[in-house]
Structure formats: structure tokens, C-alpha cells
Length: 317
Image 1 (spheres, rainbow, N blue to C red):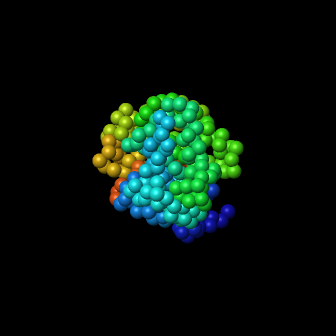
Image 2: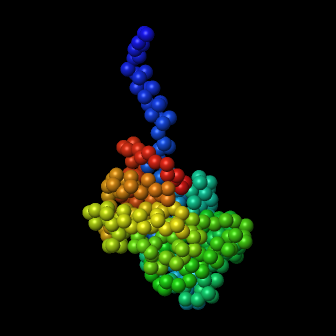
Image 3: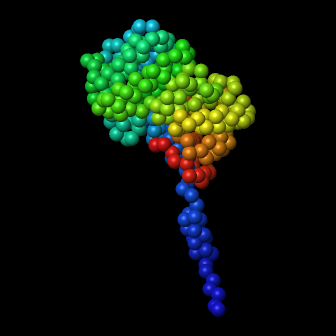
């Protein structure tokens, strides 16, 4: 039987085509969802600027930093505008036109690293839930901080102080408002990496959060310390929780914070590990200003040109 020879180029093309057909879908770094925080630094630029970078899938506006003990909740965006004087209504157009119309989710975040907040009673829960629903979500109020037309996508719980009670009641109350209202919202928890979280552990066990952004920094027991072993151990605990659907890897973009890990090291030595889980949701980068300066998110997105991960894991977008 005659033996036909083929030019080397044809052989290469055939091999590549066969490999593509046989290989499982590839999840690459360019498709990784990145979440970040806006509102804490006047040098970070506008929310329009953030959404126009093409880097982020989720922008959390922070923070509603004061509430509880019978007090009216307070939004702190003093780095950009004063919501108490209706000075932030211009943000509504930016949120809708430059973020949501691009498919970027915009969340209102409660708590924060330097807030004055607590929940001590059912009355506190009701007051905060109604405030969030009527001022940012599907409800109505005469003085919505971002104007009447801006309806945010949900609420992020960035809690690292106060009591450990009532957070589960708050997440249930918000979910009920959403289910009974005209718009569905997303709920996210942003705990520290020690499992279970001291403050949000009970709330997470309601199973009502859409995703959890685990902060692998400023927590000595599970942050990067020259080794990824502690991070991987904590990651495994979080993804083993059957009440948690999706987990974001939370990192700091500032070299000044404890637990900082270089973006190249993160992608090559941790994301390659985390992305093999079907619960991998993306990366949360704290926070926008330091991210711009360090180009942390840009490094993650550019990783696709250096390496590809083959996995069957779906990625939240």
C-alpha cells in the first residue's frame, strides 16, 4: 500500500485540531472574573473610569459604614461626594451607562475595614434592610443617593468587627425583600480566610449568598507567608462547605498589607490550584487605587498569554 507523505505544516495543523477537539474546555486568566472596591480613595478616579478599564466584572461601592444601635445608616463616599447633600446623584448615570450596560455588576457594600457598625436587635436589622432596599435596590425613597433610576445589583457584606449576631437575619430579610419585590438582587459575603468566619459564619450557613469573597490577607493563620500551604488549606475548607456555591480568591494589591502575594506568584502557584474547583468564582482585588498603581488585575488578565489552564470549571462572569 502506498505511503503518502504530508508537508510538516499540514501535520502540525492536524495535530492542533485533534488536540482542540479532544481537550476539555480551557479556562484562561482573561476570562477570570475580577471584583474590586471603589469609593475609599479620591485618587482612584471615577466609577466610570473603573468600569471602562475592561478589568472588572464586579465593582463594590463602599461603604455604608455606620449603622446599628438604633442609628440611621450612613454611606461614606467623602473621597468623591457627599450623599447627605444629594451630591452623589451624578453617579447614577455612570453606574447605569458605563457599568451595568457593559454587563458589570455594581454592589453596595456594608461594613468595611474602618467602620462603626453593629447589629444588636431585630429593629436594627429592619432599619438597615429597608434603608438598603429603598435607597439602592428595588424600593423607593425621596432621596436615593444615586438618583431614582440607578438600581444596584445587590449587597456585599464586608464585616470584620461588631457582634456576631443578626447577620443571618439581615441576609434573610434582604432575600425576602428581593423575592417579594420587583427586582432580584445578588448577595455576597466577604469574610476573612479563617474558616468558619467569626462574624459571617452563621449568615453564610443560610445558603443565601450567591458567592463568597474570601480575604486571604491580614489573617496570619491562612494568608501567604512565603508559602501557599496555609492558603490552600483554607481554600479547601471553604469550597468543602455545601452552603457555599462560588468562592472568589480575595487578595490585596498593596505590598504594605500583611499577606500580600505578588500577582505573578498568585497566578502561577495558587490560581492554577484554585481553578480546578467547580466552585472557583474569580478574584477579588482590594482595592481600586492600589490595584491601579500595582497593575495587579492587569497581570491576572495578561496571564492568558503566558499559560492556559485546562479545566471543566465554569467561571462566573
